[in-house]
Amino acid sequence: MIIWTTYKNSSFFLKMTIGFILGILVGVIWGPDAQVFKPLGTLLIKMLSLIATPVVFLTVVLAVIQMNPSQLGRTGGKLILYYAVTTAAAVFIGLGLSLWINPGESLSLPNVEVDQPETLSLSNVILNIVPDNLFTAFSTGNLMSILFLAIIIGFTLSGMRFSTDEKLQKYGNDLQSLLDAANVLFFRILKGILLYAPIGIFGIGATSFGTQGWDTITSLLKFTAVFYLGVAILWLVVYCGILKIYKIPVRNFFRNTRDAYTTAFFTSSSIATLPIAMENGKKAGISEKMVNFSLPLGAVFNSDGGALRMGASIVFAANIAGANFSPMDFLTIVFIGTLLSIGTAGIPAAGLVTLTAVLTMFNLPLEIVALIAGVDVLIGMAGTASNVVGDLVGAAVVDQSEKNQQVKTEVINQM
Image (cartoon, rainbow, N blue to C red):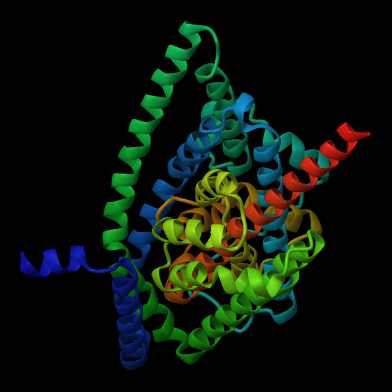
């Protein structure tokens, strides 16, 4: 009982790291005989597949419901546009670097058969977004259709909740309560799966390292290096570039927000960092009104680090599986990665859940999720720091944009 309590209350990252390291040791020592632990990993993969679709659907619906169409206004619209642009840029960076460096190309998964994804035209991609049957979209795991349903249901419920018709308000609130309850239910299931996750990671780690040894370590280190290089490009090119466009001093900005992104790096929690980020935002010259509005919104909707991870992970998975993607496939990945990262920024283990959903869509082996989870600690740290910096940059540029707009309005009024 004491052992279980200690295990249950230990840090998720600590448990994952220990499980991964033990898997490496057992795989290296036992060699091919470590295949005996394969069922432990298979069970984790099955459970992640089971939970991914409902968690993604409910999280995106509830995120969209929070947006009041009448109150979101110009400021909120600018922020959402900023999140979409930087998130798409992050996916492109992850894809581009991975296609260049090719992490995972020397690695393969034993006894895994991969069906090549069907290459679709633009018209087919658009047509596949809209399902002809509500239940078919979920039973087949059509992620694009599920996201489409989540967005239109979310916006419709948001309109009902903020309607002037009391009856529509009641129905909207009742339906939101029902979805909230379902969300809590599936998160509790997810919490249980994450308790088992380190054991599954151990099983897949032992199996992979038992058959391929140091090739697996080399590939994962290469993948991690690609991710950190992508983070550096995201910060230096995208964030600094946007700050310079709006004539915000880059060095002062990063000096004043240092506490926020360093805390995010070491805690791997955007929510825990939020109070510090809000204080740093004011210190960086962002108006209090903008800080109070944009940073909590960004904690829910913005996940540039997760988007970068998505782009890199898909290429990593494709290289291991020997799958060849068409340009249209990559555009689809950018589109899906952007939507998922905006909609699921705040969910626990978002990277594992959303990556499971996307790999399923492209018929790629889900064992790769467990392999990537082995270096999730390192990826999570830099990814969270990127999320927080992205939120602060968004708040700063939109605040500056609003100030510029106000100055223009005053000049026009004086003429």
